[in-house]
Amino acid sequence: MKNQPVLSLEGELYTNFSGVKQLFQFYHRANEFTNTTIYIDMYHLSWIDANLSSLFSAVLFKLGKENNLQFSTDLTFLKNKFDVLFRNGFFITSEKIPDDRESTVVLKEFNSDQDSEFITYIKDDLLNHRGMPNFSPNVKEGIMNELVEVYSNIGLHAKTTFPFFVCGQYYPKQGALNFSVVDLGVGFLPAIKEKTRGEVDTDYKAIVWALKKGHTTKRDSPGGLGLFNLRDYCKKNNSNMQIITGNTFWSSEFETTIFDYREFPNPFVGTIINLLFSDKIR
Amino acid sequence: MTIEVKKVLDSKLAINASAGEKLFKCLKSYNRAENLRISFLGIELLSSAFLNESIGKVVLQDPDIYNRWKFIYPKDNSIFEAKVEDVIENALLGEKYDHLIDGVVISL
Image (cartoon, rainbow over all chains, first blue to last red; front, side, top):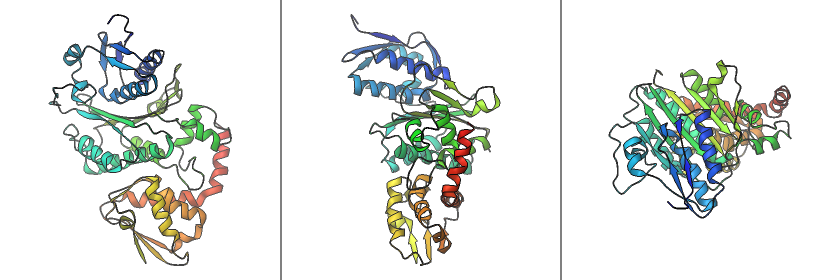
């Protein structure tokens, strides 16, 4: 490892502002290097929400493509400490590690023209997962429809040829299923700023604008119901939604707090949508 | 005249905008005075993006046309009807809605 740059991830990475911020900071530290192999030190990482594998993968993908970076780490150590990252496919070794706890929704990447592959993944890997026994058929149908909305929004608005990344994790003790969708596109603001002729000029205003029923940046056809419906669905079903775009982290959980949003000092690209489902849904 | 969306798309998935364009072209090929039945039978999934690019776009250009349309939905899927109604309502509000939203944006 002589002269090999080392970057560490430490502490806890939950699906919240702090967890996402750490991964953004990792990206910016790594972005200072090109044409080398970076060693990722995870010895002092005490927890990672496995659904954040989608964001971590997106970060590594972008660094690989744009900076010609490769990455190494201590797989033996991580197999003992975070075997979930092997069970969900984030780390791939010659020996496939089965998801015997059946709690992962495997990490995948898709392009926006892979309709049937994405639908099959949602049906087989997410909705029919043995870790989701308490969701009724009606609720599963609702989740499927809303994820279709997210998928079609990426194709319509992300403006990128890079794939998008998805991953989920079921937490049986909390009765929670987290699902993260990450694209490497342009984010919400540019198109919305143009559509509103500069009236919407911050990432937070862009999120608020995008969440309003009927809002779209498309010029010759109506639009804008996907995110509105998704937020409405989450509200009605004891679930939460996070949108991260530009420098802003917004969560539906903020609606009962003093926060409207939080800002990242070092933002990433694209958009992240985290869905935090509760199996208290009936 | 019945338009079967599944046949137009040659797919059970009515999800992306490019599929919406196919249905849009199909709808535009008919005389606007003709009564049409638009059938979603056999369609498994339907997105707002698809509907906006197809039905919504036609209604935006010709608001009265939907009065001559009748929709046929799968019996076991109530979400489709809600989405179609939302998209049409959104398209009909059109410019008036833009002005309302401009007012909201200023207040942000």
